[in-house]
Length: 157
View (tube, rainbow, N blue to C red):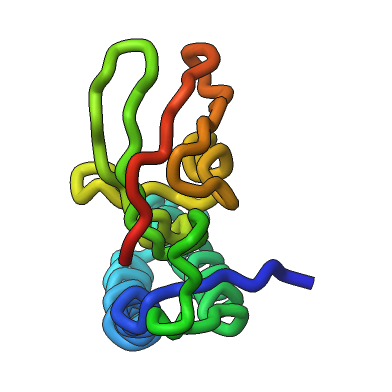
């Protein structure tokens, strides 16, 4: 059984649009590539045909995976999120205890994560370390570079 993931309505719609595009335009493009390669003659020594068939296999795999993700996705009602502790969709202002740097992150699903937009995955080391913490608490995060300590300054939406 696959894992249920939680999304904003916008994030889920983006995934559905991508899936729809892959099923229609993506499949159509691959079919054209296969047809063009097939028209070039002997399939036993046709590298273009082999490459197009490989691309088709990868596309179908991506469609299957994305279909599973969308099928197990749930939309979160942002108005019902408890802002007394860090949870998915929380906007969390944290302070690095070691260097004093402050930053605000939004905790999102893996597929919606975008570090440039300050959206981190709920499954990332920092995301997991912050989950369930309250304002004023310290979070110890084990990251690839070692242990980091953050103080929760603010939780909002």
